[in-house]
Length: 210
Image (cartoon, rainbow, N blue to C red):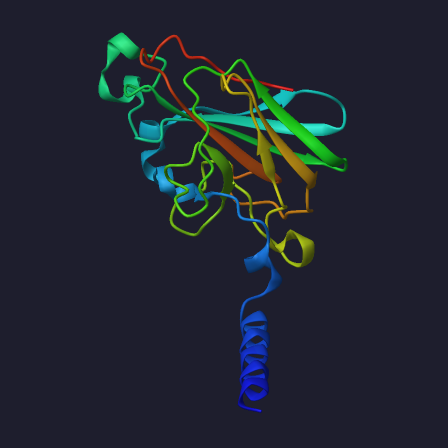
């Protein structure tokens, strides 16, 4: 009798958790960084290497790209002439934002150099793949995803594949929700990132999306 009563109590607590925490909290985990993690709009010269810029892949997917120095070490901003055009540390954050009406999208980045796969939702700052969400902490310069309501209230269940030599990585996306537009140059759509490290900061090795 006591055991049955305990089961009822446990079941009730589980239902309470589901009510207090919406379904988005139980979606598949993906590392989530925020726009302000790399800096503020006011010091964009230190972290925004270039972009946002529009890429033309095909007629069904609209893609924007931005290249960021996550350690706020744009070489030209700190008079590092030896590494001008790159990030002094050799650490690069490549951001891609896109919209699409397609389903079961496979977004692949090729010709990676200095990439080591790390997918850790509990430590997004150290993850080398993931998504970027807009926040309200002073950065409206970087590409990011503004979450909306309904299906657009969370990120899709993204999974990743990559070969052992880490020369490519693929984002497997069931569909892109209809995210609202952000402010400034935050853009609109699903925003994903990869991070690489080059022992020699330049020449810059830019991934090729496919």
